[in-house]
Length: 402
Image 1 (cartoon, helix red, strand yellow):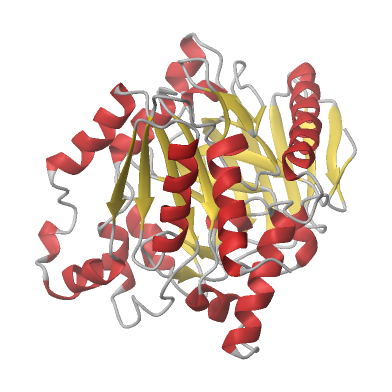
Image 2: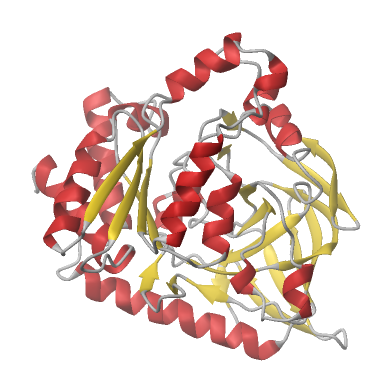
């Protein structure tokens, strides 16, 4: 068994390698929370070893956010100092590599905070990061990093030490670090996902239909919607894998053609917020007109009022049961992991590059938010429908049939 230092170094190597694919002479921007110092330092070590020019670390402290939510005037909670967004735009202009980490450090940090206020203060997310990502100015990657607090949230019935060890074992499995050659294992999975994206693009689907417990949803596609999987490329020609792990193929829907009801199949933990459990949403004419949940609904309702596009969909993604994350059966309270465990939808901004250049790209949804929520399971059937009304089964019992 690897030591903890070896485990951290292995994740760091994947992050700067097949993940962000840091180039010699490149600036690397890290987004970090207190408690993630070990992985940020390991990534810096690996990045400089690959020839990085400079590694810049930006810390966001959720405890400081808690103080703001408890004491600052409500009308100020949407304020973001301009230099925060300007830094992200400068990172994009520099064509830097970006690496961030997921895994809650302190799961109790927002206990007792009004959920509605959590939806007003969107930090650490910024509108500028969506802009930079949409323009494909950077090669970037998000990776998981286990902490004791996160392990307690994922495995509450275990003693802290046992929970922490089990979470590490799960992350190693998910990241394919249990393979003799993790990079080769990722290359094989990325090729498999790319072939599925190619097949979906060949179908030229008009819309998708989701049917399952509490779900009967129709999601239209734009004529120019293009299915993409984990391997991408920046405008500078640098190939990278944005999410490690990645198990999805995704595209941008028609934001005006979403109708029906959908029930989330996993809890949702928005970074910088609290968990949303038992989410249920009803759409009419593309807009979410009713958002309910067993807990945390106010967070999403407030976020979906951010702007005109916030209550519409910007992404649909399909994930099959071959996902190593889904096979584990754990709920990780991490969008990075949970969205790659099952099919998902996202409120807010579309990724412009998932629509062919032209008038359809202008029709893709635009917003200051992008919030994924999970809707897939073995009980949810996903069917593609062609323009003539004929149907093509896509996912049945969690498996690809296309």
